Image (cartoon, rainbow, N blue to C red; front, side, top):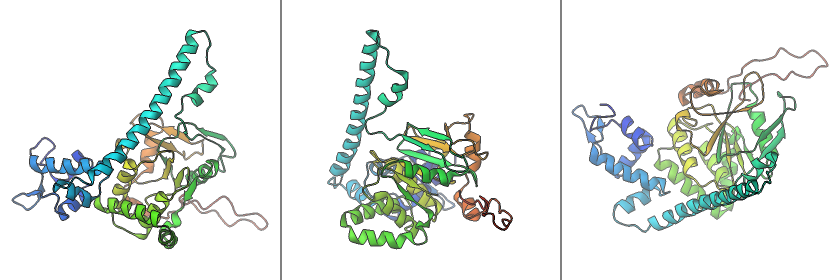
Length: 358
């Protein structure tokens, strides 16, 4: 089979639909989709099956769980109204932001026509959406205090770098520099789940949000594990102005990573951007980076972090690509230490040394 054939393999169908193959299998298990079978017993998707799968994918993009999709396709449209209302709210928020920016540009042009040139230094501030977050901080070691500014913070910013590049220190610096931001560390898989369960038990509203998010993720093929529960609890908590997540793929299998990034792209982030450290191609697929996303690279030579455009040939693109690996490879190299310093001489502190996922 190939992409132009009338019948598609699961991988081809998933690619066209923008979902994972495990998601297709979940839809089949839930009775929403019934692929054909070849003579050899392989699943195949013809025009009718693809049309049905496109309906499922469209309803999922509106925010419906797999169970809700099943009810809608079965003729019960009651779940559509709240999903459409939430989608409308997101669109109206975007329209409001754009309308405000259009008004600002109109005012600036009017000033120019009257001979009053705006201060170039103020243009960046004036042309930011209302409530947009800007970051200014003195970079920690290993950059030794260079100034770092990030004024165009996107809803999702991926932070990437080789072992020992300082990306975790940058992430912690961002969490400290953004007022009200939270940092979710890699201890999620170890002891974060117990704390998450305690918070969920004490907060009924949080419990509902977590249950809905987990339902979404399971519907897209994720496996509920302690690491996923702790991560979702952190993502759904109210209060933080921004979330910085260290190694977002920690403790998650391949399908769960794919389901998670799809969920994060669909969810309404509003004024709460996400900074996601990752070295996984399932989380950061360079071919899938959207307009509301950005990539920050921490170079191996400890030059200041740089913004990298997601297309081949762009400065830093190849460096980003070499930092990423498939989840199976990441699992084999988890906890790798780039180098270990020799014991420090007596009276001298330990070096800046053992560099793992920094």
